[in-house]
Each structure stands twice: as C-alpha cells, then as structure tokens.
Length: 461
Image (cartoon, rainbow, N blue to C red; front, side, top):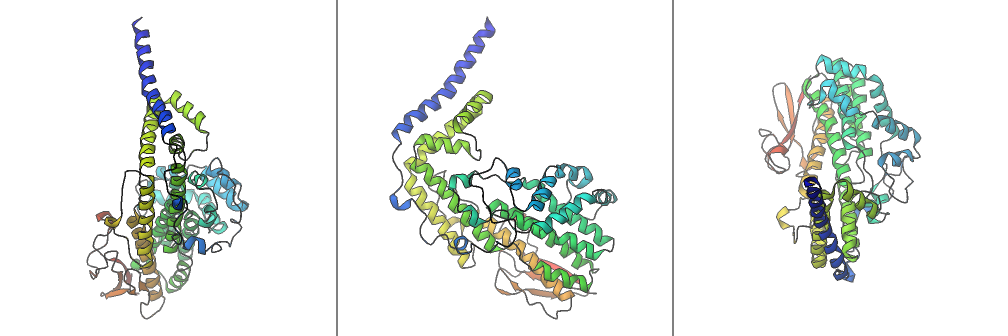
C-alpha cells in the first residue's frame, strides 16, 4: 500500500516537472509567433563573407571531392562510405573501426607527448606494422578535405548544423602513431623512412582540417605534432643535409594556414547565423525543437517521447532551458543578430590588418550570443605555423642556405637568430610581438597572449 502511494507521488511529481514546461512552451508559442527580426536582417550583411565565396575551386584536385549528399547522412561512416574515392573510403572505414586509440593506450602511449620511446613502445610500433602501412596508404589516397567550406555553404544552414563529424580522438591518434614511428625510424638510422612517416601526417591533417572550426583546430594540432618532431631532429645534430633539403621542400607544400582558418570562421558565421535566423523567424515551439534536437537527424516528436520515457528529468530540464532561451531570443532577436554580425565584422577586419581582435571590443547582449574564442583559435593557428616556418628555415640552413630568409609572421620581419657555440638558435617573437631574445619561451598554457618567443635550435654539423 505504502509503495503504491510513493509510486503515485513520483509520477505526479514527474508529471508536474515535465508538464509545466510543455504547457508554458505551448502557451508562449502562441504568444511569440511574430517575426522577431527586421527584414534587412534575414541575410548576412553584404561583403562580410569574402574568402570562402571567392575561392570555390581551390581544393578541387582529387577524386575525393566533387560530390555532395543532399541531406546530412546518418553518421560520418555513411558519408565516408559514399565517397567516390573508394580507396580512401575503404582505408578510412577500416582504420576507424579498429578502436586504435584504445590500442594506443594499451601500448603505453596514454601519456606520451614526444618523449624518447621506451623499448616496449618501440616494440608496439613494430608489432603494428600493418596499421602503420594502412596509415601511410591513407595519406597517399587522401590529402584534401572530404568536404570543403564552399560545398558546405551550399547546404541549408540547419542541415549543415546537423552534419555528422568524425571521431577526432581517433584521427589525432593517427598523427601521434606516425610521429612515434618517425621517431623510431630516426633512432634506428632510417632517416628516409622517418621522413616518410612524418610527412604522412600532413595529408591526413589536411583531409581533417575542413570544413568546421573544430576540424581546422584538429588539423593544426596534427600539423604541429609533425613540426615539433622536425625541431627535435634539427636539435639532435644527426639530420643529414640531403634529408633536410628534401624535408624542407615538402613541409613547405600546402600547409594548413590562416586562409583555412578564415574560411572555417566564415562557415561558422554563415551556419550559426542561418540557424539563428531560422529560429528567430519561427514560433517559440520551433526554437525549442531546433535547440533540443541539436545534431540529431531524428524527428522531434519521437526524439522528445524517447527522452521523456528514458530520462524524463534530464529531458524536462532541457525543455525548460530551451523554452527560456527561446523567450530571450524572441524578445531580443534583432539586437542579438546585430551584435552577432558586428562581432564577426570586427574579427574579420582585424584579420585583414594581420591583427587579433580584442575580446573586450566584442558585445554580448544576452547569454544566447554565440561568441567563439576568436583570439584562441587564431593564435593557435599562428603559433603552429610559426613552428613550421622555423623548421623550414632550420632545414634550409642545414641544407646549405647561408642565411635565414623566412619572415616572422607576427611582425612581418625576417626570423631572428642567436649564434651559440655549437648551434644556431632561430626564433619568432611570438604572439605578444615582443623580442625576448629567445630567453623566455612562449607557452600557451600561461595564456594565449603570454610573453615568450617561439624558437628552435639547429645544431651545427
């Protein structure tokens, strides 16, 4: 008897907890059916999107591209399977279904950050030679993004918003495995093989780097893994001039750069603004639906029913949150869009001046305003490219070039050098643009714009 009373109380409580947000949503949906934005705000301001629209053919060089599903596929694996580049699709599917990250952890690499390999780690790489061969083949089969920014901008923003993404943890592990294999080969005296493994990271990073901002940052992180390994080779004094000459030429070929970042940010702006506009022009119920669905392709009512029957408290909380967000959005839609456009305009204008936007100059009117961390993404991109450019300068120096001619991307002056007894230190002034004579090392964990120079040491032979 007592148990039945408690059960009834529980269901009544859940009914109130779930029913009240639904009732409020229905009532407010009737009230907030007005179009909350001005007619001139339906499309992005003219001229704000430039780079992506101006370079539609930049990456149309492999069979991977030239196709586009009309609607978001069920998952990323389905997208890959439909690729006309069958070799790439087959290898990618094979690699992504092996749980490589778990194998990598079991091999003793869970906390590996480029330190010298232990005998056990080196043996793991030897034992997984087939996996490494597949990664080398994947690099040769791909090399360009599966989907470019330009292609994504042909989609309806809501479809693009729900576009499936790959398992980036697995893809980052591809780069780490190749870096470790390059280190193993280099230590064994096989410099040509080491260069082959290291250079394979670049094409995989580039094929990962589009179309989204997160894709770009993952690609940049993988590119930096390869660059850091080259820096270690230069400091070791063991790299031959012939290998240095070959590496320098190939590293300079088609890196992930700030143009890629600019295009990714334009897509971020285009898609987010498009989804915001769709939400603002619809009813409050439509806002709640789009907010709760997120990246799922499942129809809303089945999605809501499944949520309420499997985890009612969490779903009710999401429902209440989305309703509150919708009320704020409807009440302040026009100004929110105006601030959103203004923030991106400031970011793009700063990029045109080779500067980084001041976060304090951005306007946040309400807690819905989606302001990404422009400074963090742009600085990480620049810092990664600086290491790559330092490596190329060091490789050229080792190969016989008499002086360092590369430009420091932070101040548009030649990279600086410090002569030591047995080495040449080449450095960039870093994001703070202050010359520390390489006596302070830039470390982003101290802050994105913290003091310090980015440097490498080239040991004299």
